[in-house]
Image (cartoon, rainbow, N blue to C red; front, side, top):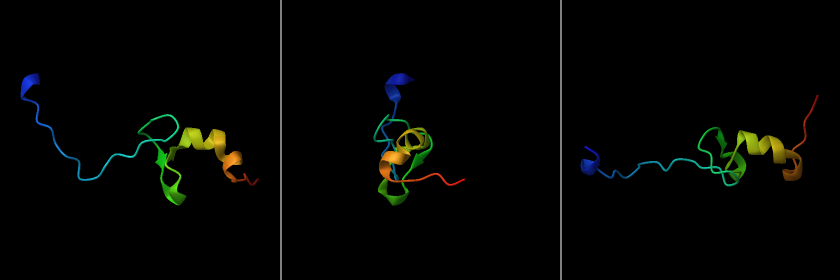
Length: 52
């Protein structure tokens, strides 16, 4: 079966994190393109602030 695999073109490209390459939880709003875990680590450096 493995030799009969059909290469399919994606209609929509999967989103990939720019920092770690993860596919899960990618934030594309504001053109960030990073996953939620990388965002949490780098949010202050990006100019985001946490409000209480």
